[in-house]
Each structure stands twice: as structure tokens, then as C-alpha cells.
Image 1 (cartoon, rainbow, N blue to C red):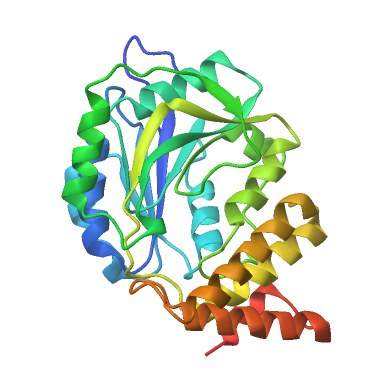
Image 2: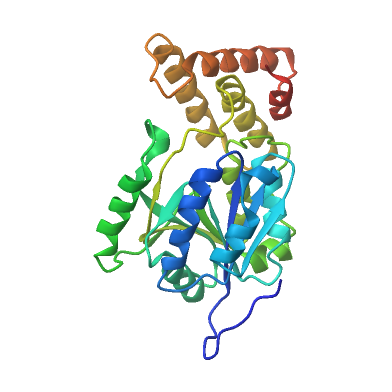
Length: 304
């Protein structure tokens, strides 16, 4: 599918890419809100792991320039498939399937990339993040979005270490020019794949966070990886990225320690929505593998 330039519009072409697995209901509830943007999206690409993850016909009926593609389950694999599917895009905005954006989000994103040729990635301000709690119901998320929509976008951009994977836009000329890809050695949920990809891009330009871009991460709990696997990744992935030099020890070590401490303390009084026991056991398995010299992010694929 080729992009079309609308008559009289010479700005950058922007595509939205959404990787999804096992969350058909929330995906179909969230995508229609992308059509309420002040600057229309040029294309939407949804990459699913299974046919049941998405109703392709319904999506095409909703927005003609929607493509549904498939890849083996794994956030990095699915996002790489999206990268391969937007050959004509100038900007690709990665959104989680449970992320809502304010109506000016695409317009402001295009403006950032037009205004600053050295910006290679932008990420927005998350006004509410359900990943930190039990999750945010769709109607509550929409209410927060509407409250932000009443105000004119204000503020500016500041440099950041990495984008936040639930909402990050990339300059595709840089991605193509340097052959950048998400690291498929970070399987399943990925965990820090956004940091790894951000730091690859950071070698070629600036990464910024903007207070003119607003969204709500619902933090839907279905379709996520097990606590055991996530706990293992919390140790294995940052250690691996330090070896790649896409994550500095200054950033990786505190994150490892925070996760270890949180899981060890809260395992006795876990939140209802978090598998603290699984995460703690995963942390311990990873630490044991680290001592034995067997630590690898890919080990999560055989954990049970």
C-alpha cells in the first residue's frame, strides 16, 4: 500500500504502528479514537501474532488505509514487521494497543520533526499510566484525554535518555539509513526494547520528550507475559544491554536494584494485579544464571 499526499499538503507523512497480542477487545476500542486527530493519520499498521487478535475486515472498514500484518509473537519481532511495512512513511509513531492520545498528538508530532531536523525520536507526556496500578478503564482514560483536549497544547521539548515504548515516534529516514531494528534477542514482552532502540537512534540525533504530546496508558492486564518470565527479564535484559552498550551501568544498575527490592519486599503483601511471587522467583533464577555464566534474555522462552 502506497501513501497518498493530500492536495495542498506537503508535510511529513506519518504512520501509526501497533503491535498486539491477545487483546482484541481493547485494540478495537482504542483504534477508532485515532481517527479523531486534528491532523489525520496517513496509515495505520497493526501487527498481530494470531488471526484472532484482530478483525482485519473491521479495521479496514473503519479506516481504508489500515494494514494488518502478522509476525511470530514477540514485541520486537512484531515491531520489526511494522518497520518493514511502512516503506513510504517519514515518521512512524509506535503506540501500545491500550494507549490513548489527545486529538492534537499527530499534528504536534509532525511539527516537532519538521521544526527540528536533528530529532530522531520523540515521546509524549503520559498523564496517567495504568501499568503502575490495576489499570485504567477505557471510559476513565477517555475522560482524562477529553480534559487535556480542552486546553491548547503548551510547553516544549527536552532531551531524554530514551523514549517510552507505549508512545514513541521515530524518523524513518534515520531508521532506514542505518538499518536499525529492534533486538529480537529480547523475546516475548521485550522489556527495555524501547531503551535499546532509543540508544541506537541516539547515535544519530536527539531524543526528546514533549509536553505538547499527551496520552493515557490504560495498562490493560490481559495478554501480558507471566510474572516468572518478566522477573527473569528484569535482570537478564539490562545486563545484556550493558554488554551491547545500549544501556549504561548508571541507568541499568539502579533499575535492577529497584526491581529486586520491590519484588523482595512486596512478595509478602503483593498487589492483586501483580504476580510478585513469580517476578521474585524470576529474579532469583536470573541471578543464579548470572553467577553460572548462563544468563541470556532468550532463556525466558523455556521458563515455566
